[in-house]
Amino acid sequence: MDEAHTTLSERERHFIDSQRVARLATADAAGHPSAVPVCYACDGERFFIALDEKPKSVDARKLKRVRNIEARPEASLLIDQYSDDWSQLGYVLIHGHAEIISPAHPLHPHALALVRARYIQYRSMHLEILPVIVITPQRISSWGPALEQ
Image (cartoon, rainbow, N blue to C red; front, side):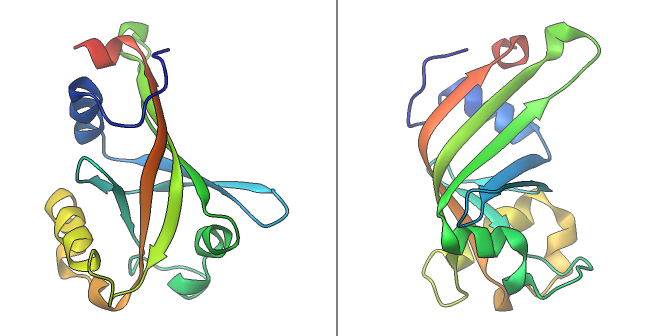
């Protein structure tokens, strides 16, 4: 594993740009963990996770990940690659400060442009009315042969 750092290296950036899904880990006020798969975009400094229109059992603003971040703004984002060919394994793990930004926040349009550029499904969704999760890295670590390619 690489020594932890706070900014993405070029090889980490290439790796995360080539992956399509990550796992977002949060915890509630009592410290009970929760992890969910998410789509993400990165501008080199922050990670953005849109709260989208996919069918959910509750309103996007009441999702467990949102409630957890509001209660406890620490989060981890794991971007990994698995293969039965273990020479293709790798991950980038981001520990950071998470926040929920409203549609009125100055970063909101920037976040939507990035996630829409990565995921065609978001282009027809009305994301302008929904909050976005922003993760600012405080510690980044990575490992694996896949990052060396």
